[in-house]
Length: 507
Ligand code: CA
View (cartoon, rainbow, N blue to C red):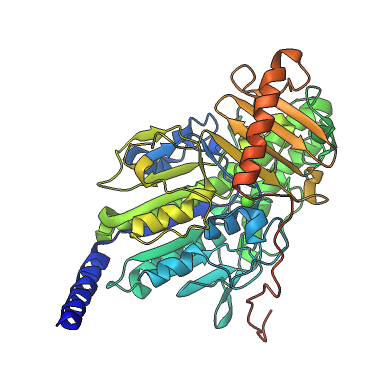
């Protein structure tokens, strides 16, 4: 009798579980690559308009203090999948291989009854695990005519990559989705990553415009440690002819190449004739670089709009939580730079918009300090699934309902590892609070402290200023507390045989 009751209860539980499954929200996670919040009109951009991304801000929540734990492509993706800092997920710098055998949010959602798919940029070395469907770029992937990978092997595509990734995403939503299950769809662009190759339809956009320069374009780094002077990522010195479109990319089809030559050759001839020097040359490079970057953003914006339109038309919008973020922030000439990596605000922060009809107040904003580390647990919370104890973030669900918990974090821990490496940014770690930021370039053993209220552009470290001696002491104590909390003793976990890549005859 007792056994029967237990079985009946279990059956009822199962049934209500299924009923619940039908109502559980879909999750659409949209991530672009290197998209600066400074290039989104909903974040107040003075450079461009992003009407489709702005729809998400108008209909959902804009996060004004969303940060990443390690500002670089692959590591950010690994943090998002695992809900763990780089030293615990083992993927601390680009070029490593993600251990796809470890726990990921995709696997947990799959177990919880979600249909899972990833389309677009992946960039983790190993094959995706925990996804029912995947169709990914190989490594970084080109802007035009990308070969892509599926479990079955390589597929060649012709066209502009941002459009193709969206076509594949729409095809999955329309044709491959299981309507009996909620979905977790990861839709990831490679744009606007370097080397900023626009779509043919955008090649002459902004030709007649002058894009505003940031205040710190001619930063001389005099207020910071040696690290800021040792980098190789300045607009002035480090953009290549390929970056600047002084040479035509090599992988274009005939019609694509004709469009490029028609767009750039007259501009390049005018540039050569002008024979610019000094600051005038830097200003020209800035315009050329930022315009191409914004053109790439335009294609992302248009394509996100296509997906949002489909969600509306299909009726999926009302039960789909849509995230838009970037794998990190980016310098649009601030500090004289392009690229990312630093714990300074432009690359440490990342855009984050979340639209959740019926849960999130349209047009709301949050200045809670949130992290890409929080996404995994947020997805699980949305799905009503258990959050494993070894994940290190915290669900954003209450914040999305307009109720930031009283004990929400008031400091954020950061650790960047990729040195020696591209752009020569020293390894560093640090802590940011509401007002201060302490950074330790530990291989140089040099420290910086910024008073973000007085110095929002982070131009003058006050680490050695006696007036800040107590702040330095408090921030160092907070840094130690966070290192203990997140179990960062400086070593990155090494997995044995981390690759889950299938042997394929193709490459
Ligand atoms: Ca990136």
